[in-house]
Amino acid sequence: MILTAGEGTRLAPLTDDWPKTLFPVGDRPVIAYLFDLLKQYGIKEIVLNLHHLGDLIRENLGDGSRYSVRISYSPEEELLGTGGGVRQASRFWGEEDILVINGDNLLELNIERLILYHQASSAAVTMALKPMGAHSDYTPIYLDQDSNVVAIEGKKRSTPGYAFIGAQVITPAFLKQLPRAGPACLIKDGYRKLLRSRKDPGQIKGFITTGYWREISTFQRYRDANRDFLGGRSPFYFYRWREEFTRRGLHVGKDCRIGPRTNFRAPVYLGDGCEVGAGTTLGSMLLVGARSSIGEACGLQDVIIWPDSKIRKGSHLKEVIVTPFGKIKTG
Image (tube, rainbow, N blue to C red; front, side, top):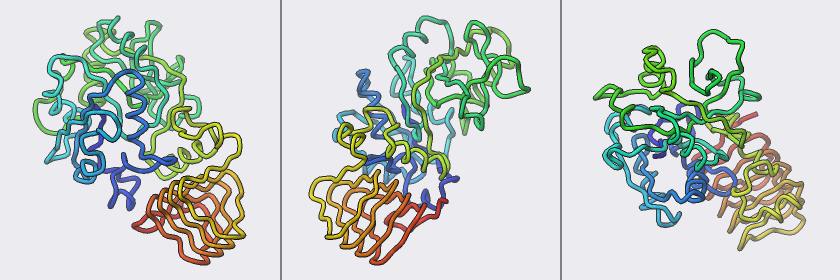
């Protein structure tokens, strides 16, 4: 299950018009990378919960055939939170364990090892964790020597903390411990409740990974995810033209029309069907979504342009996100 019902309030006003899980990173929406990751491990049956702009998610993803997956939807009239959303959708998998991933995640994770690790334990939940490192602004998760989760936040401990990367394996027994109706949070109403009960220290396991992880809950994190893509720091499966792009720092998609005297300052990534007017300077750190048009004599640096956007003639932009609905200053 991929959690896609949230409102993404920290990314407003962009999320007023477009759901966060469909935000483009590189040349594809965030959720497309999650589909690719799951397919690597043979997972093609996927459930999405819907609430905020759910019709747009359903309209854009359909039954999943375009991505070679099969999507089922669990609409929520009332936003049910992470726990309530999974609880309601559990009719799709019955008494099986379920892999749950946040829909704003970009990650490199060995899902096979995560599942095997979970199955080898008697845990109700296995959380995928990453050493805090550069993620010090996230809530720390603490483990004991047997990789049991012993605390979520709380007072600072002598043992190292880990960041939860928004992927977990959950048993049906755990879901039955959540409130039976209304909104519920997996962390607040589930994991922390288990920890407070102290019945069994092995109820929540931590699976440690060191792979790539970003989530796009804020403008800065969204911008960083796209800068990773442009800098060749994203996982290999993010790129459809990796060798060319990482070597040259330049990709021009199919059916692009580039005007004379266009100056490229790598890295620049142009999606398919883009149009660039004469005398324009592109880059550095420029991502242009498919079918976008850039007028003559423009200068664009550190700009993310969504598909089907238009840049007027003579525009000079820096540290901006441009969408069909308007533009947002990020610097």
